Length: 149
Image (tube, rainbow, N blue to C red; front, side, top):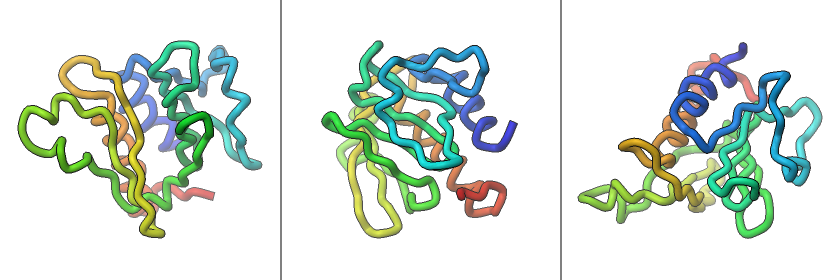
């Protein structure tokens, strides 16, 4: 199991019920997964599906980056291009942090955009779990433990 698969299991499979692991030979991917364009050598680790049976606001994690469904199209973001992730300002303080429904990705190009994540399980929002996964990936890229082709 490479580092990304281990991180996916540690952060996503165990803690995020809408996440479906696709690394097992017995995994059955959602029927719409073919809408995602993968490049040569890229494979999916799993997919976060907040609306059962639909790609709406889904996030597919691959060995190279995230495929994010936004308004009917899939946007690809390489892990090694993510400069920072953060909560929008209105969620940082007070009771709002319990209702977090999105996070912000800042790319190394300066581009910034929000990623909607609407579900919540246990005491943390799904946003927090996904951001911890991305932090683990970024840390391993920085330390040279993961190389993104």
